[in-house]
Image 1 (tube, helix red, strand yellow):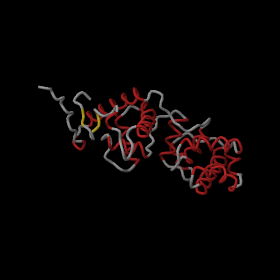
Image 2 (cartoon, rainbow, N blue to C red):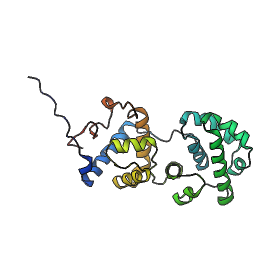
Image 3 (cartoon, rainbow, N blue to C red):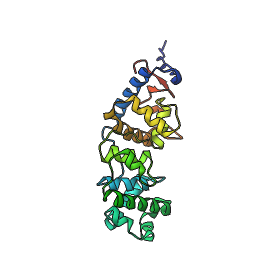
Image 4 (spheres, helix red, strand yellow):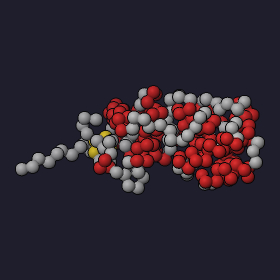
Length: 231
């Protein structure tokens, strides 16, 4: 008689003790590190300023398209002051391929003006200062802090939001609450890499409509599938 493998224990996320959730989160972080050891930001940038602009342009656009647009944009307007003083029509033409190009032109020129006038052309390196810039929210600010400045930061984009909820690491829909939940589960030094790896995983395996659960390296810790007792 063939033995049937025991199914993983079903997890009741609502009743999961914090210590167990923290252990599961850290196991997930280790599994992501094994699966995507080199995962990092896919936007091309050479400075915090370039990453700030590229992140704004990446809204509802692929990183690949942004990376095709930004080299010429930064060649023509290499500093915040230069971009702030540029003709909006010219900037619109350069960023058109990223979509919503008029709104994005207004956004990057407003930020350029603020950075040039208030910070002497240097992007500030704190969450408070970054989110005080026109149109900059926590997600964009945390991308810049964690990726360009090397400060511990968790940025909650659509992938991080989806996976945090699917994995039972947060029950919230609000990105700020998700960010705080993840911060409470992981050590600071893991935050930025964890966020980048979640994004990689969301793009490659745990897609919004058709997650590839059969090949997922996180399956044993996922409430969607079942949770191993050895987590």
